[in-house]
Image (tube, rainbow, N blue to C red; front, side, top):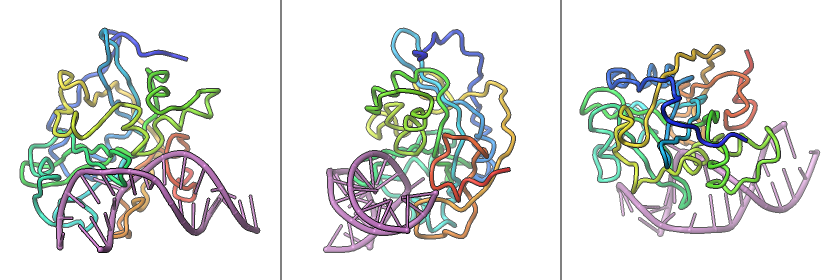
Length: 218
DNA sequence: ATATCGATTATCT
DNA sequence: GATAATCGATATG
């Protein structure tokens, strides 16, 4: 298995803040195929490709944390775009979002699944997974709670960090990859506003989370 | 393959 | 006091 790789070998550019200063639906769709990167020790990093996202629309979206206005927890959503909103849920898991839209408009995109590109061994240790073959890989980053654990993301450490800057240690980059077969379905695991199709995924990608009936084929 | 359930805590009413 | 943008284990077809 590949370990994390030297940072200088990465041929990918940080995604600029202007990318996130848009409607969360557009951001969620166009984030598919981008890379999430985590700086490690000795100029190494973890890398994984974004394969599943969900858009949350802010004040007009009953399922969004921002729906009822600013609170200490969700304050980051009301700040500038391109920053991490990390929250703790079910007593066990963290979820990672990136803020969207201009200051004051609290839209965001939830990261639901990633496909590992580098650093699988480190992710496996963090997840407590024994890798016996390729079929085990989705257990690393296939799901919102799994990917944050694999990347060592916590609210205490990473909430409000700047995802457009490598100096934050957690950032989003573009290596030119453009996915085909993008699909849209209802969001997963929410009780309100279930009718909207705001979940975006790459068809046939084995890292996409959730039941198969919600993973439409091309 | 699909369904149900328990874990465990920050957050808000 | 209730709820939750989840996961993993267990049960059943």
